[in-house]
Image 1 (tube, rainbow, N blue to C red):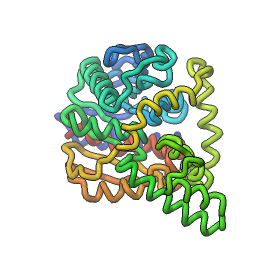
Image 2 (tube, rainbow, N blue to C red):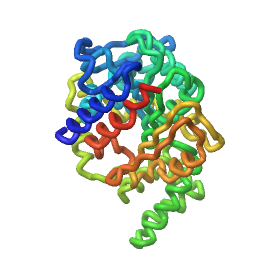
Image 3 (cartoon, helix red, strand yellow):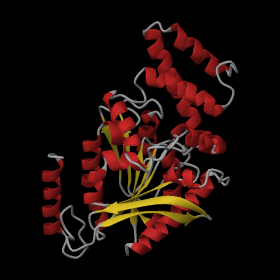
Image 4 (cartoon, one colour):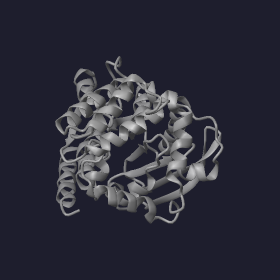
Length: 347
């Protein structure tokens, strides 16, 4: 927190001195705005879904955050780790159909596809633009949410100031192969015959190891976790668990039941994800990646971004993170989001 204050003050002074025509969104400006704290079920795509919108001023730029999983809501974690973002943005998140408080409201929703979730996100985008009288908003997607988010940014670039891909998915099939190669190297170094046996089974489609893509990914995730390629900072595990159970509205939520409900129905969309042939996009793009992310290999995102044509693009590395930099290094994440994004409101 102490590191954030001087950065925000510097940003405020910079914008005050350099932009006399465009509306300024600084961390300590627009003090006349009203505080935003809204939590409700909203009709998106014909079903009620939980939406949470929080900010210290309704004059700040809007940041729409799309969670991962699929079926793993980020709302309580954002409250716990990333509340500082609400000083500079109006942070909007929602529990996608089939998970979180949306699942608690309707545990039988069937229309679970990537296309439908993208449509839900676009409908929410239009509501946010109208509600806060903003022509464009920021869009961030984490893990599975980066599949949703990048698809949305491709389809509707005119609605967004910038896209932020956190642990960005590029090609799920290729990613699993890259991960297995990395695991094989680590296991060979350690003479870990048990892991090597499981890896062989995964590569050969051994039904005694797993019998569908989702179960195989979960089995692989267990190995990646064992070698620090999912959570690099082990201390964050404890705090993440605390965040997931700290708030009364999620205290009784069955996280794994919600995850498997969504993931089973979305399995085809999850494992067919592939942006490899995308060569350009019409908005600024930031990829935030943990240096040690081998769950969704960050090396693929780096290679993809180098070839991508965009008005602006930047790869931002978190050296002490695996798959979840927004939780493993939250202070750095919150600061980076403010530093990098506020300049885009002037474009």
